[in-house]
Length: 594
Image 1 (tube, rainbow, N blue to C red):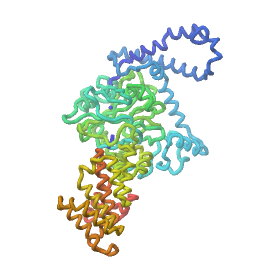
Image 2 (image 1 turned 180 degrees about the horizontal axis):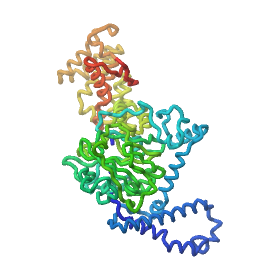
Image 3 (image 1 turned 180 degrees about the vertical axis):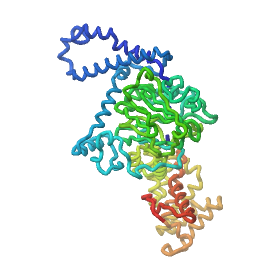
Image 4 (image 1 turned 60 degrees about the vertical axis):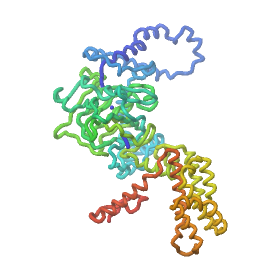
């Protein structure tokens, strides 16, 4: 299933901003108040109307942000910290965007979210929002939308019991609902791949000890927690990562993705830039620029880190077990904690934090991003891929279902399940449709048509599998006997199957059993009557389906039936020794008392 700072000088980005918003630019603007050129009045009629008030407010905000950042940079540079290129904002419009006062805007949005909504407006307001962003209201714990006093409580709603089932058999599960932006292995140069080929520094994301501005323990004690353990991976292991984007309509709380202990919390002073997939694809180091919290510790394979990243309008990052932590504080950045640095807290003694899979860790007040960086064996593989939609607590149960539907050839069900789960099939749907036609032909007794379709698909399937071809011919013989075509059945057996039976004693025995059908009344029980059952057609169709899948380098046997059989078997074994609630109905999966 599923599912990573050096904060130093902003010299690069601020220098760039001075070029855009500096004195020369201001003088130029004042020298020509009518526009960008002397013929501005002539072109005025051709210009589209501009929302002047909005532009003015944005301009004032940019100027305020520029002066604020100038003060911050001065403090930062005087602190003697080295310049850090990881904090550079690349691109002209990106620098303009990063200069907007988004921290202040996010605090204002947080204030609006806390205002009480009149009861008579709640159904309309929350209902409209839910339709716009696809909120699953049937999963919420509250009985009615009117139970939510304000937007903030609605965004941070809890789920009703049973809405998420945590896969306790998995080492790693999804920490939240959302969409996987990217996942994989951290490169040898310690770069984390992002979307569209962009990368960013792992060390900058997780933080360097030299960039610690505030700590609750001495430097000597802090080193014992080894929050930088990601720099020394055990032999045979590698660092893996996963980035999950929580959309505004998603469940906004995040949970522990594994059994692990949290040693350190690092709170990075940063921006409040949007973490939408489009912005992520344009800003190389977005997750390094933004305010975030890095929770680091250990799990069964070594280093483990979970990083909730703040975003525009999401100043509210919540960590349940850390009452000292406050996100998007007006006092940060400051002289003691400039942009690019972090404060940290260590959890020891009675404050020690041990988490189990599925334990609630905290949440966002709207929607944002979770980054996981962890140590695991080199052969570790994620059950999902970029772009897949995941739900909190799941590993690969949806994959098992998709695996079953694809292998069994249920194309319509594959399309529907892909739409509901957000999980894409790993095969071409056209290949599923062709297998379905072949399966249907066998299940309806049209063996010659099935053989013809297989040969059109791949002639080598039957040429290289004599046993499969014999079973198809045997099934044709059974269909002739079923139809009462005795003479045709005898001729077919002699011309097509007799020689194969002489070459292989096993084939001969099966041929003799099939021919013995002629000696019994089909309406009466007989030792070989099972050959006329519909299950025999299913058996032949399944064998051919597996051969086609093998030729296409796909899995041949669905895992879901084996899992269900194991569940039933384990219940039967335990039933002899202990009394416990059991799953009697595999369709509903509801627990029933013995």
